[in-house]
Image (cartoon, one colour):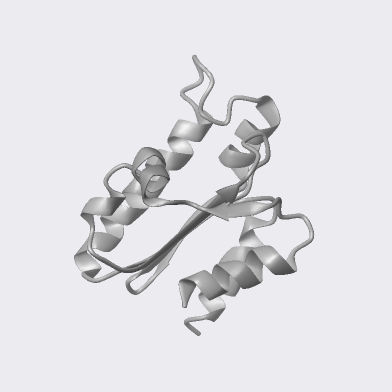
Length: 133
């Protein structure tokens, strides 16, 4: 249950900002193309305040061939937030931009894919990987 995993991760750590589940309109805006992929589960949460970095996206695809497409969509989200070096990205402010650049991780296990952008992302990756050990 990806939503339960997300709740346990973000609810147990004191340094996570207040989070909100993204609705379909937000998913389409921030993760273009994701709605075109058949999923069994899709849970995406972001910080309620944009100047604070806290985002976690968890997807279980129906078809293993779609794992790379989800990873590419997640990488596009990171790239957008960081920017291209000539203009600011979606994170806008220097500290959140650096956080997206240095504290974002994309991992997959079978048909499950996760993007986490948060201080201590490696700990969340360990917890995610532990679900499949």
